[in-house]
Length: 172
Image 1: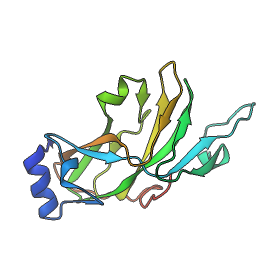
Image 2: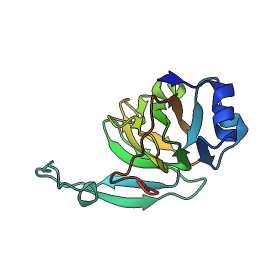
Image 3: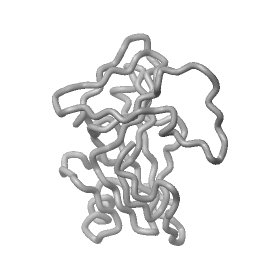
């Protein structure tokens, strides 16, 4: 597999191997595309007790949906995690995969945008859920529309199509 750089990202978009909606050209960098924070979040319910994690577990049982208007913000306390989603929908050909990564400018505040699920499968067509964690010591205010993360594209050897549980996700 090889990482696409700026020119190759633009060429892959032009030939339909990558689709990003919406996309401004300024989001395309030398080795990735910046993605913006959407307006929909899931926050964890403030409950005590045990959360059983097994194959039938559903994150919706321990979270609640929250929407934040443009210009408003959502706060995330130190050591807290919330789920967010990108505004952009990414569609990849079966020969493309990618990695969701944080941006160093926000990591310096203690902000992480994914805990474990950074790999995006070939053939996806969805918005990217963000597992946002505040590893810092101060409460952070997050604003929809902020270029909060980046997507790194890789060309695959062979082709495949992801058809799993989150194939068409549009909400966190």
